[in-house]
Amino acid sequence: MSNFYITTAIPYVNGVPHIGHAMDYCLADTCARYHRLIGDNVRFQAGTDEHGNKIFLKAKELGVPVEEYVAENAKKFQEFIHKLGVEYTDFIRTTDDSHEKLCQQIWLKLKDHIYSSKYEGWYCTGCERYVTNKEAEENHGICPDHQKPYERLEEENYYLRISDFKDEIREKIESDELLILPEFRKREILKLLEDSPDVSISRPKAQLTWGVPVPDDDTQVMYVWIDALANYITVLGFPEKDISEWWPASAEFVGKDILRFHAIIWPAMLLGLGLKVPKTLVSHGMVLADGQKMSKSIGNVVDPIEVMDKHGLDAMRYYFLRHIDTFADSDFTWEKFEDAYNNELANDLGNLVQRLATLANKNGISAPKVKVNLPKEYRELMDNFEFNKAFDFVWEKIQGINRRIDDEKPWALAKAGETEKLEKVMGEMISNLVGVAHMLRPFIPGTAEKIEKIFSGKIVPPETPLFPKN
Ligand code: MSP
Image (cartoon, rainbow, N blue to C red; front, side, top):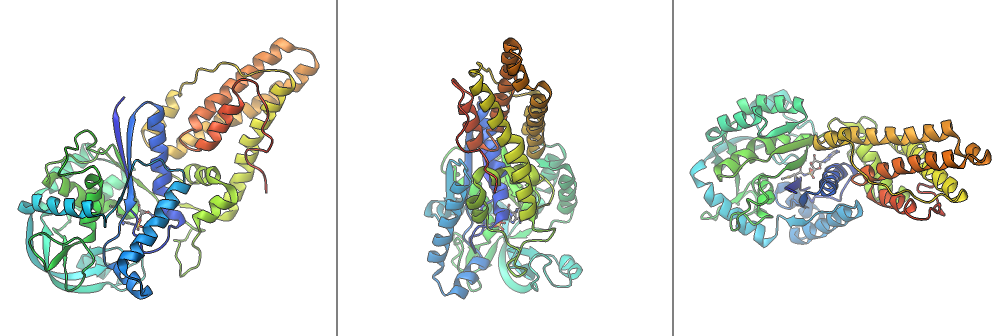
């Protein structure tokens, strides 16, 4: 049994959760459940990112005190995570006093790598990111993700000397000591690292008050990404506590849009603190709506609560974990979702459970004793974070059992009085289905549990189908 620490990106609370936010949680929770299943001791952090200009301006626009605004939205995120069935162990808000205090201690520990200088350049509040002149030029002064002009900043800031750590970071990424998944993103990051300048890590209070105060300088607050990234270790109590039991993290889940912060600034901070870098950065793709980025202005934002209320939690998890590619951008459309629900969940799986349970019940067949073990192929895919492929593997097994029922026709065996063969065939199919349920546990835990329950002891078909059709 080993310790396995999983982290998720902490969302900005400048709005309510949207469907894209489900991605980090579905992947991380599946990973966590799988590791518990194989006997690991899992710690799982989640939280909310509550500082920065973007949030401050939004609260101001709404005329709500910023503390109240962030508290209200943080609650919505927490409710959302619960509704998704995520079994996290720690929840952190970056406005927690303990987090702020530990961030200040972290800042002081990084002192040797921090210097003050003037920042003259571009900033995107939507991304909360300093933008190089080259990038601003290439994008004609407008952020492609937020469709807003970059802001020109001229201010006195503190900088983190990324140059102190560049060689070490490159070496760790190249050797996979810091494994970046998928592989092609690793190459992108190595390229980006070459040109990475030192990074500004504070903002003058005159421009922005909503942040963690820089220790020993009451004119500055920390740049939001510095306090946000630190959450992964402040939640464990660093630097006041020894975190070696859990650190380095086994897997950090982030969207591809924020990989650069996690693969450059974050390792630099960690190395500056004398800590190890995370073992794996799993960078997932974006959830799109009909091939387009979801945005309020286009009006194509899908509400995840609506999806869960309409078809249930496992239907949502199913779509996200099987039909949204773990690493590439993928579409969510209601049409695709409903097709997957009806054809796969209701037909392939729901009907299979109903058919097998009914046949067993009718013919007085009770559940065989099953010793479940996870197939090597499944384990390899799960160990390598290839979740949608592992789910495909499980689904092939489901389709295999369906084909076997059609081929062996147990009802005909019953009619012909071939009891021995009937019991053998049914026993094998039920054992396979229980094995499938075991593999489904990390993905759709509620359904897996129902199947395991139906096929234990006396088999009684469920009164309502597992996935009722619309
Ligand atoms: N606050 C930062 C993260 C700090 S982590 C130290 C942030 N917040 S966010 O709200 O913009 O995004 C939170 C997570 O949701 C990120 O991993 C991001 O990639 C993910 N997603 C946001 N929109 C998404 C989609 N449309 N699709 C998939 N993931 C998306 O970045």
